[in-house]
Image (cartoon, rainbow, N blue to C red; front, side, top):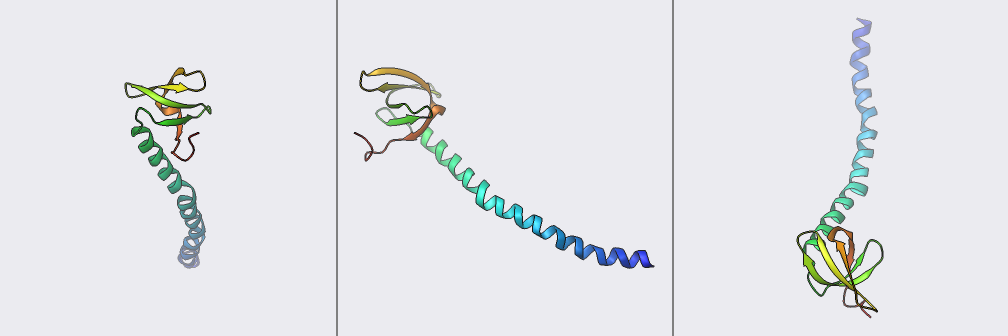
Length: 103
């Protein structure tokens, strides 16, 4: 009888103890995971929309203009001032330079 009363009263307390953990997971989801998913989606969209003539910045910091797209995963960039052509992976492109940043 005493054990039965103990287990009946312990169940609501254990649910209340679980509530802060669920709240922390919810906060992590909205503050960390959701923005990361949005950023990954935007990056994939940007990589899929690359075209000849676009100026891009690679993850290594190289700024170049796309002169050719070879297959699904390779780009040829023209890098100034000597107009050197570099072959890079499409996934190495980190950002697209807009018209305001061009010099």
